[in-house]
Length: 102
Image 1 (cartoon, rainbow, N blue to C red):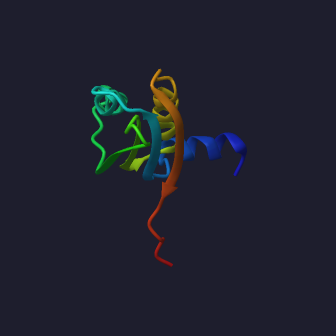
Image 2 (tube, rainbow, N blue to C red; image 1 turned 120 degrees about the horizontal axis):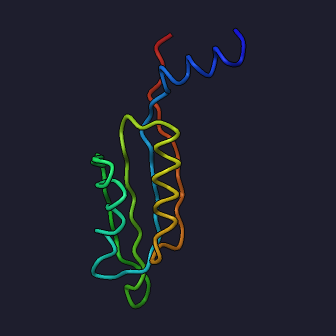
């Protein structure tokens, strides 16, 4: 299969997985809503959201999110949007896939 045909096949049937995001941000009354905003703008609802305030003054917020049926492009765009938020310090991403039946 030539490279153009491979790209077309991948575009027609993108690999989907659960996209996982781990976000560290300054804790503020609006932090959680701002972190969820990039998902909302795309009409996406995470299946899992866990938020915890930490630090001696509870001034840091750790937010873990999972988005099922995502693809690499969606993961990349959401991570870039999250990194662009002023209050966000760190965004880590990973992919969680189900084992394929052999």
